[in-house]
Length: 236
Image (cartoon, one colour):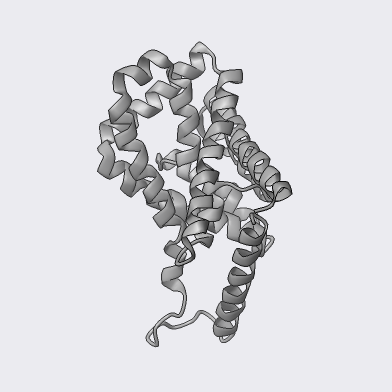
């Protein structure tokens, strides 16, 4: 990765985290179904500006080189940094209280359930990004984002904003428990982001919904490969 691309990667990943931080702020301030719907703004900006967000890019590194996994890990850390910055700028006592309620619910579920519940969130994120970025169909994003929030599916980047907003005393009191809940969330999101691969090369017993389905799947596969190549080339 040359200097120019490195600067773009770092600034873009921080900005992507900041967008999710803005979305989380709006959600905590508004609350309810309306707040969940407005959360979609963050991902809309990420997709429209092609910013490197962990849950948007995790689908592209499956079975690829270790260097690209390293870039994905760095991307996540920068996304978290963007959320931490937004938390420092926007956190209020009300936001801190709401964040603690969310994280307490995560801790009550335990690491295993946090990981399992993160899988459908990752699936929704890939559906949203692929729909908007490759098909110019924004409906999976507009409905999917409120869906994962209302269902309580953890999103590892959004959760980092809640962690950061909980306050030092809360973090100090639950430090190791928070880490134990967060790491499975990252793993679950990654798995969920790649669940769509189970539908690639359907077995013979699968009945397509239309005669054009094989051609559509072939076009999707080619677009996926091209999209992955572009995503990784931009980061080199």
